[in-house]
Length: 225
Image 1: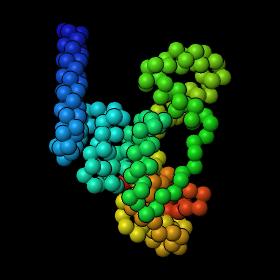
Image 2: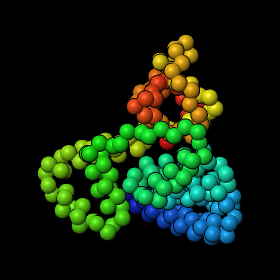
Image 3: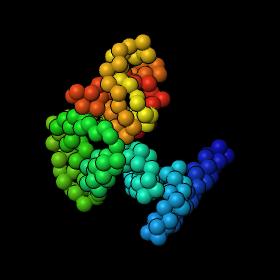
Image 4: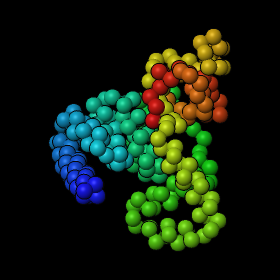
């Protein structure tokens, strides 16, 4: 009896998941039509609805496009960065982030990823595209590559659940020498600046935006990616 109930439960769960995915595809297609018609607010509402059921990078990317068309450049950048987190090497995302950055006063260049991280990103991108699947598996048979990139990939997968980057959202945010309002102010930064999180301590996070800009800032002044 218990086995029968378990089978019925699994079947019901699969049907529900299938229905949710089908509904998300319909809403995504409807949102695309609204966007093409110039109804950006309506398209945004539908994309946000899809985002509750899907973490596909294209959903975040299209949400960013809607925000951009509606003049909300900070929300647009946040959405593009969320899309980039899932699809690091997508040229369209990089172009739109650069386009959005023109609307902000601060624009620092973060350090480039190291060789291993970039190699993993390249292979992940190839696998999700599907066109270079054979190349991915051929390279995976190299033991050294499997050990090195496999360990890095496990770490990246685990990191997907936590934020390692953020965007400044508050005006005249201050970077301090330590985690607390009693520490020295090093820099004042403006909304829209992308930063990388180095460390966390209570309500404060240590961030860097370039080799010249680093310090501690209150977490409430950031949008975590």
